[in-house]
Amino acid sequence: MRNERVRSVETTTHGRVLLDVPALPGPHRLLVGFHGYGENAERHLEQLRRLPGLDAWALACVQGLHRFYAPKTEEIVASWMTRQDREQAIGDNVAYIDRVFAVVTADLGTPSRLVYAGFSQGVAMAFRAATLGTARADGIIALGGDVPPDVCERPAARFGRVLLGRGTRDTWYTEAKLQADLTQLRSLGVGVEAVVFDGGHEWTDAVRAAASQFLHTLAPP
Image (cartoon, rainbow, N blue to C red; front, side):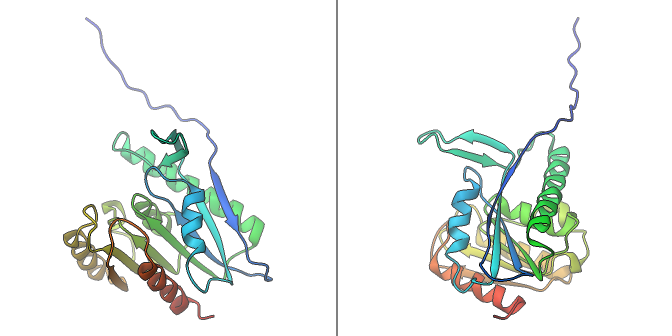
């Protein structure tokens, strides 16, 4: 007879963050982005650069620690976590984001405003960074992904203001999920608003305009 055993092994790995810094003197406003499953920091940075009116904002796009090759293109992409060893993965990712913030602020200084933005799988990371990480955010932009249950007992102040975005043809982040998230966040006392746009699981000009307006309410030009 044989016994199968599972042991958790802690190790050190390296991630990456892309910075896009305005040619203006600091302190900067900082928008930290988290890409979706099968994307990368470069792709997410392209989307954040397309938000109108962010000349005074520094952008920092964080890449997930779990890299792989996209099946058709062999582009290097990443994911944040799976269901396996979920709690440990959440802890690893939160520790990673804390280190990212330390590196970014050592480079740029302490930001005058801090907002986290996530797309799809990256939405959970945006909420975890704001509520479980060391740096308190002024706001969260969440597009095409639902609020993770592990953050729902955190104080409302840790969320800042929240913008939820959903495309009308998005079959993943459904209308039912959006309404459940609005109800949950409001029950916590979080200031939350939603933008529903004509589109699918994607960025569109409409959601970019809403995200830009949301940022301007947090930090007027």
